[in-house]
Amino acid sequence: MSFGDDFVFGGATAAYQIEGAATLGGRGPSIWDTFSHTEGRVVNGDTGDVAIDHYHRYKDDVAIMASLGLEAYRFSVSWPRIQPEGRGPALEAGLDFYSRLTDELLGAGIDPWITLYHWDLPQALQDAGGWPNRDIAYRFAEYSALVHEHLGDRVKHWITLNEPFCSSLIGYASGRHAPGLQDPSAALSSVHHLLLGHGLAVDALRAQNVAHVGITLNLYAVEPASDDAVDTDAARRVDGFHNRLFLDPVLKGRYPQDILHDTAEFGGMGDVRDGDLDIISRPLDLLGVNYYTRYVITGREDHPDLVDKRTGQLDSPYPGAAHAREVRHGMPLTDLGWEIDPDGLYDVLTRLKREYPAVPIVITENGAAFADPLGDDGVVHDADRIDYVRGHLAACERAIADGVPLQGYFLWSIFDNYEWAEGYAKRFGAVHVDYETQVRTPKHSALWYSGVIRSRSLDEQS
Ligand code: IFM
Image 1 (cartoon, protein in one colour):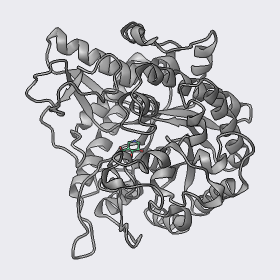
Image 2 (cartoon, protein in one colour):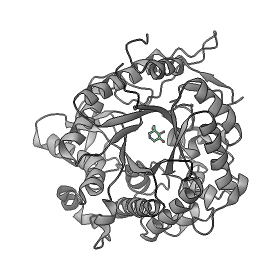
Image 3 (cartoon, helix red, strand yellow):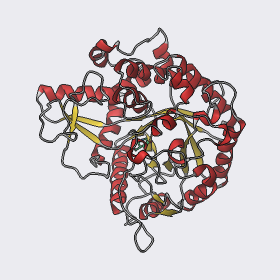
Image 4 (spheres, helix red, strand yellow):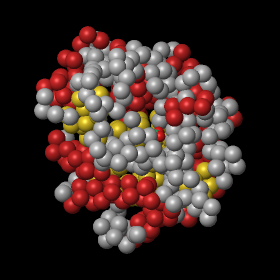
């Protein structure tokens, strides 16, 4: 047995990507409703209006997860379903939906894990300035307390934010995600206010005796394309923005000096007040790690292996470092063009052990988009997804053997769903969803994963 009995195997989703029912139960619009309804923002103009209709089909979805033997399910709560305007009392209908989902999961023997913020900021709060406005951090803590007050008796595992890199630097600097702005100073202030919101939410949940709380960061293995100073400096910056800008304040209580220096022209992290970093670095029960790929980085505009061949690009998520870009490093690609590099996961996990104070780690997302079709035999033969997950679980095994306190793995995603700016064109699910009929069909990878969970080992699965 490679994975002990305490190791948790689960699957993950997020509200806007699966729920649909965008206007039901009094739900207000989020920045993703606005963004997806704006022409030219999302491939094919796809929106999350219907998604996979999980809002209505949650019982069937829980039954599918139970049939696969999932031990835990990580889902997010839609803030505008709870507070349509982002403030004020909680909507009963919203709380009730998540309460019913929680009860259904517990009844099926699946442990619910809640993410409080997976990118769907109430549009009303964006209209009030969005994450660049410090006040939003306090609103987030209030909303978190409302949700925990209602569900904390049954839900023991809480994650404040999912991937604050994306909600700040992709949403406000590159503009490729909602709210679609390209303002480096606003993006950096958003980083600080998201992290402040995280710390304030941890305090609010601790005041209610939360059982288990943490944050999820999307971390990357990053290395330079060569030893040339142009490349090593570019890689340092990318590592700074993706990894250290979030890990250092949360786990060490300080922002990385080099990134503060590099971003001084944009005002650094903005309005950082005395005591903020103490709040941001409150002790956590877990660090959620989302891992997808390794970035090999060049600073050369003319590098022959650039992933994005455009020059003078305007949509970089790295303030002041648009020259830092990814090059291919020869690994196989997913359907999103992401290089498949499981050793990168091992590198990320062992780096956490080496460079940061000890904290229990859970892989809260890992998985891949592949375009495998539903075959004539009614099965999706997604050997590529099985290989991907097998390779990454093997990296987890190695990391555990080397002393990394890794306690669980959540597959992204259990169901095909709305892949943000890529719409429905990219499929991450272990369960295929026919978007016309909403019929769900477990892919081969789902059955394989189910076998891994049952045997707690990779060895017995073909
Ligand atoms: O679909 C996303 C998810 O919402 C956040 N992490 C990465 C996934 C794949 O892009």
